[in-house]
Image 1 (tube, rainbow, N blue to C red):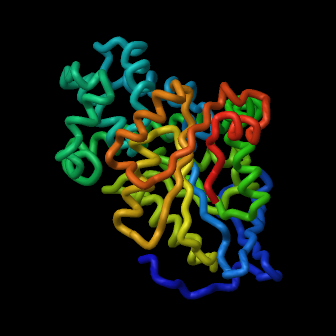
Image 2 (image 1 turned 180 degrees about the vertical axis):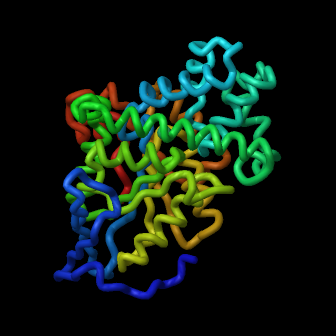
Image 3 (image 1 turned 60 degrees about the vertical axis):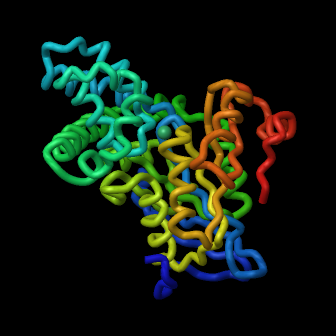
Length: 326
Ligand SMILES: [Mg+2]
């Protein structure tokens, strides 16, 4: 699937720059043209893939409210506040099927051990297919997730854009600006279902910087390595030359950064750099990354938004010695 595509005429090449139309919806319905800079070898320096929740924005308050309403309807004998708290603690599992499958297990089947998302992930190994791909449990998780996404999208549509503006994680948007100046093509990959994903991308104004979006339906049966494959294909359809260097930016080592590693295992001609957005202790996180066998050979930079605050990303990178390697 990653073979050379037929080039289409959706872009114009201008010296060492090209521009492509973004797929992401905007308020005035006019698709934005995104500029890409090409190096002397004819390729952009890298392609970057960004997660949304807790990476670009804090959408938890929307997810939480929609979840609480939905689960209170379906499992009225359960404590909705407690369930919602548990749900919000387990948004980083990599696919929305896993997120909802876990919560159905807790609410319907009394699987207390899954209250710890790490215990769920331990169980998940060996059960990938029944959760991510097919079967009654998958179907129920998928149905609840879509319903939840529609409820979230409705809430977002009626929301003052200023409220969502405040949820933006500013240092990550700063990184977006830096990549944009470098002419690096950027895509969004989220395990949210389409209604909510599209509504949020539009409200956050992602069409100004990002070219394409992958949401859950685009990588059913896989983790986000499937989203990366889908997005590369989408960029190729738009005539973007794909360099061998990829960047994955996300808040989940398991759901985002490891997916980059999985993609490289499948496509060894590529290399991946990770950027982990995390409020956890930086030293502890560095240690966790070093010990993670899935992340061997993947350089991972840690961005701690609260440590950067209103300050400069460059200074943070210098002080923390986390400068990017390209
Ligand atoms: Mg996330």
